Length: 157
Image (tube, rainbow, N blue to C red; front, side, top):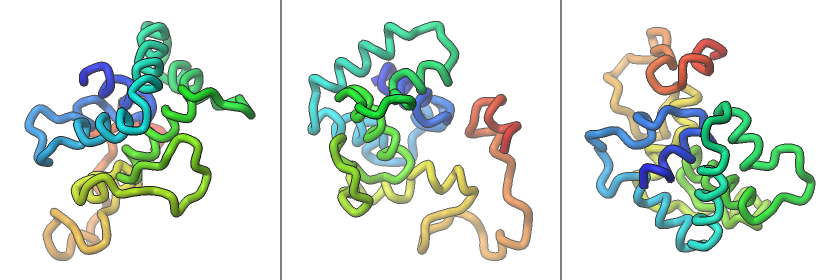
């Protein structure tokens, strides 16, 4: 699980503490739901992706992400497609099959997955119909991203 969270942190750009807080408010934790969704698609590919991630240890996070996602490839491997599906899952809370290119093909893995999607934090927003903020919060500037993104990313806004 720790390796999956570390991989997910590199792919999403969010800190491991954000993805898998020590006191996780979701039950079951999103990291568990997400790993299960990926494994359900192909445990073999997830294992290969985690092995590729381990082999890149020590390189800058952006280099690792670009390599695993094969950002310059016009014909991505199964590992890259799985990495892209995991990335989408963390941001959107929906599982998209690695071979799918259709925006409506996603399947929400759990109610908390939609609410916990990283897209909301990245936008400094909340899902429609759900907010932990008190009434009138929109009258103030949003909080800084410094707590959820690594320092180099938070400064770029």
